[in-house]
Image (cartoon, rainbow over all chains, first blue to last red):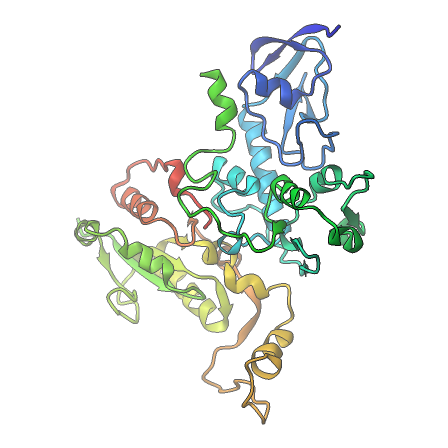
Length: 234
Length: 182
């Protein structure tokens, strides 16, 4: 049987199931901890660190840390918010994120976090690395300029035998996402859409369907990311 | 007290941000009551005739002339505002940034699919033309910028709110809908 433990988030006391991931526990209580790489039900990767919280005074990734008894979690503090904003800014300068020309704009989680934290300009210098676009597969475009290496597609999109369609290639600065060319030919419509929806940015795009929703009606045009979770609290 | 003086310029931009400034509609009458315009494409004053309070710049720096104009603005304006994605991060012109300049020019003037008639392989080389830079630079990488207004184009209400707040000294509260990167 699952054990119920007590813990606090920003000084407020809560009860939750021991072993549950912090981001998911918090979401149930109506507290938003931002995620980019995490997806409920998928093995956590902890690769983007946007979910950083302080647990008993130490920084932890909220998406990989299981709940323990008497945890004192800090989430909504100026220090943590600034670190999260810095991570968003770092992701913006590290890739080539030209929002005006991206079809994911308005539905993009990274951009939405930029809006949430009112990122007016990144504090870091732009990298402007040259990256390629892979449009060789029949259903998908892989726009590597926008990849933030969250590894969602690698972990989530698999064929009937459990083989991943996506994989990481290279290391460090040369790391890039790649789509298995042979597998991609037989990719189902369902998987193609799942891949596009799983991608938190505009890196994986389904061909021939872009710009379906007009400006003003997109996901984050009027409401901030995390609002759906936070309204549970009100 | 005399009115604050505003100057504007478009560097490597598309004039979309200036269009958005005009999108403040009838508030433009209020704006000219609040401020006086100096060097700007809006009133077609070509050179600074006095020190300005607010400089609003659209577009990034893609050539030597852009840098010259930007430095002139820094010298002549107390406050400089980066207006729009191109000014803040280079914008669409910066899509060439990962590609060497020679490759870009070759593609544009020699190898591009629409280049048919350039048999002598001429590249633009007139002395009057400003030198193209190795990449497109955001404004804050060249001079100090005081404020940033993102958007492509920045919403008219955002420009209005920011300029009005600067001129009147009120606190600027930006609603969620106004800060957009597209």
